[in-house]
Structure formats: C-alpha cells, structure tokens
Amino acid sequence: MAYELKQVVPWGRTLAEYTKMFSLSDKDLDLKILGVGDGPASFNAEMNTNGKKVISIDPLYQFTKDQIQERISQTKDIVLEQTQNNAANFIWKEFTNPTALVTARLAAMNRFLEDYEQGIREQRYINHELPKKTNFADKQFDLALCSHFLLLYSQLGETFHLETITEILRISNELRIFPIIDLNTQKTPLLNSVIAHFEKNFTVKIVTVEYEFQKGGNEMLVISTNK
Image (cartoon, rainbow, N blue to C red; front, side, top):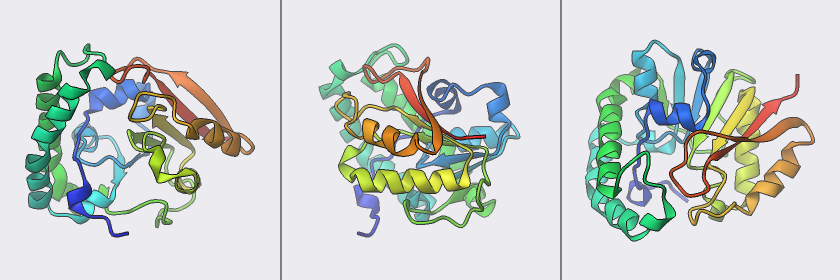
C-alpha cells in the first residue's frame, strides 16, 4: 500500500523529550544516532544545531515542506479534540493541559520545518519506509531511537515489527524503543513475542525512564548487540 500524506497525523517531539524518553546521557548524544520514524520532530534539527550527528528516516520525507506544513494545519485541531476527549489517559505534568501540549508540538514541528529543506540537502532526513532494507551499512550507527512507532501500533502486526526491528539491528548496535504500551495505554501484546524473538541473539531489557505522559508509559525496550 502506498504511503499517503492524508493518512499521516504529524506530531513532533523535542530534543528535551527524546533525552528523557530514551535516558540519553551526554555520551549517548555524541554517538552516531539513527532516528527511526522521527516524522516532524525537532530532535534532528536541535541536535544538528548542537553539532551532533543524527540521521532520521521516515516515509514522511518524500513530501515537500509545504505539503507537510499543510498537513499539520489540517490535523492540529483534530489532534487537540482527540487529546481533550482522552485526557484521562495522560499525566498532565510535562504539559499542563491539551492546549499547552498542542502549542508545544506545533513549536517543535515549526523548528523541524525550518530545518527540513537544509536537512534534506545534507541527507539528514531520508525518505525510507521500513521494513524494506535500507542502504546503510551493517552497524553504521551506534544507537537507533524509535519514538512512538514500534510496539505502539500493534495493529501493524507481529511480522512487520519483527522485520523492522531486524533491519534496524542490522545497521545499529543498539535500539531503544519508547513507549512499550499501545494507544490505549496497555502493555502491547507484541512485547513478549518481540522479547522472546530477539533475546536469543541480543541483550534485551526493559528500562524505566524519567518521561511519562501516557499513563504507564515510562519504560523503554532496549535491544543491543552482544559483545
């Protein structure tokens, strides 16, 4: 099935959020990092400003800046309404209320848009749809980060997740996935099967992190190459 912009609900997160979600140390931030499914997050832009190395992959990057901006404008009010209707599923500490959340997300996405065209030219934003094989070399990255994509969307199916994670681990020494709950704030049924599949050949662990916005969503899955 073709990836269509009308199916996308753009939602951008910041470097500060990534740091908390993935327990990123100063040493981690100096690594060669792959952002998986970063979408319109400002993480890459902020890291680049700080002289750090990040490459983000996402099929969103097949579209132009204007197309993405238009889609953000089309969906922001829908996202606000959905968040207000499901406010009980969230902990309002990082953000005081749904309006403050959307304001912060729009600021992050605007930072992304300001950087997007330059990032495309510098090949920091690469159009790619997993689980198709990437053009990256084996173990090209020290660390891969996947925010609010893998495990969260269990409806994509077990095969999709296993194949996608396998490709990420081919090109990265370590993968961190956050969160490990689904959209209904329940532990995803995929979690046990993913752990069972990869713990045969990798070190797999669940780590508690500082960040919690979805209730119960304060853990990440870490899968790393055995050395």
